[in-house]
Amino acid sequence: MGKRLKNKNVLITGATGGIGEKLALHTARQGAIPILIGRNEEKLQALKRKIATMYDVKPICFTGDLKEPRFVYTIVKSVQRVDVLINNAGIGLFEKLELTPEEAIDEMLQLNIHAVVNLTKGLLPSIKENEGHIIQVASMAGKIPTPKSSIYAASKAFIINFSNALRMEMKGSNVKITTVNLGPVRTGFFDNADQSGNYRESVEKYMLDPDKVAAKIVHSLYTSKREINLPFWMQIGSYFFYFMPRAMEKLFEPMFRKK
Image 1 (spheres, rainbow, N blue to C red):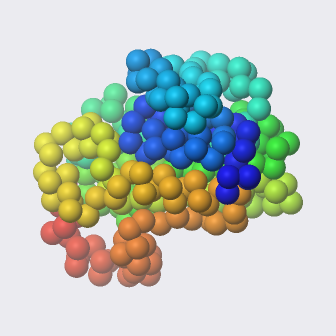
Image 2: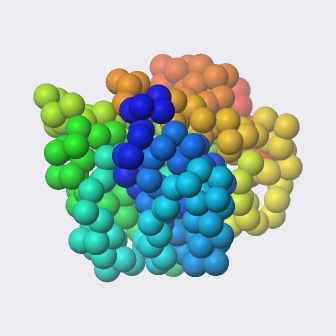
């Protein structure tokens, strides 16, 4: 793995915390050059210094909001080479559709869909030229929709299908595409998504560790792995949900409504 990532440019969105921060550290440890995208300049610079000290690697940083198309355009035009793109940034809000503010809906669609599509499209020529890898961090919510997540779940289902179609388009190009579908992860995501804290409390003991998730993602780079589905029991659940949606909705309704 170290040889495969040595001196590769790895662009990571949502790099200032959680999975994104761990991805930056894991890729730098393998000799890659992380290109870090985030909104918090202070956190980005702190991570840059940490990586430089620990691994003698100098990351490249872009500070801005991916919900703004101009920022995405700036990244695409500024980055000379990308070998690996990891679309990790995302936002959610657990609320009934009728109570969800239009602004929150727009933010989820802009960051979870438009930014991912535009960044992927803009960087695709470089990724193709370098026979690189695209990692799309989606969610198990894209396979198992639940109450109070209609917009978020739909946005992640979009990413899963977008990635599957793009993979077929890229046949013969040696570009790898992997979709990462995760259950709850112990990150700051829930600060916005679960403002009551009820869901986070109910799933705390099942939460995935962001460092372990990042390690699995990095291990998959430059392999033909189509999907990473974690935890395993949710992967099995997604199969049952696909074939028996009505029965699964009825069986797991009490758990689904903990949001």
